[in-house]
Image (cartoon, rainbow, N blue to C red):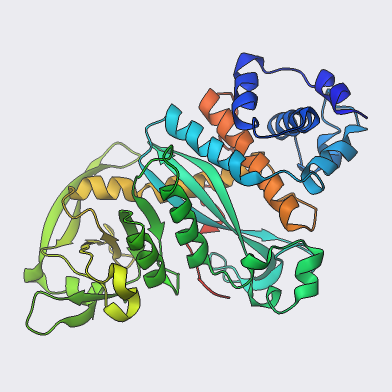
Length: 406
């Protein structure tokens, strides 16, 4: 059936939806692309169950014959997802007060071996080996909300040598061999080059990233501020002495006279207020030169340590370039990553990021872009049902940047 027939069948969501469509999908050259985009967006928002072209075409008001057109729009239509995502990010930046960029990892379970990027790896959340795709979701955080505005598909090492496999999945040659660290620093470079996007700090969980130093170095080259949670054994350099000393964040914070204690007040769910101690290193540290290279080695960082209030878990550590900010301001920014994990739960349950059934690299990016557009529209418009439905798990099945290489 024609895109005009589908457009006529899709009920309008008022001026808000039309304004959103006109702004975000202005880059589409052909009218039929904009019509199919509106149909796909509407089905992602209003459809129930799995979000595949066939199931979305069964949604009320969409004729079943629309399945073929929806499939073609995602898997065969040659539209560029990058300008769409930039417009999404710019709209979020214009309509909110951005505080931070952050990233969450999402493992997408797959049964077969032919979907783009599928491989076998250990889920760091469950500890079990899974057959999956590995995605990075880039968020722009504002207050307690995080908006997904970018995606990367991390290909494991087997996708590089197997050129025929990559050709069938239409994977660009430049994607081969890119690590999670490459994707994060590459996206940060894109953000820095866009004048409409905010230069706010990057908030990352690097506790399970084996290329944490590479991520920090890349962000330092972009002159981007950071608030990064790091593992206890993350190396730092004390350079204020005659002979620079390499140590770890945990070892440094064990020296009591070298740290300052700040007491923050936190209200528990039952309404009680309790004091939470946070330790800050009295000076600043830099990174070992061998880890950072030429651009990041001299950058000063502050270390924060937050002991577990109940003493049941080990302390948590952050490195931040915001050396002049108050401790509570830095930790408030650090909570952006927790908000991103909650947003991933909503993306999974409501907007079909687990449901892409195609096998191609462009198709995967098209579907994820549309899922982001649906999420952003719902949350910016304040529409009902924008958050995860009741009963959604409190712990999102997403994680830190668990490993920069496979």
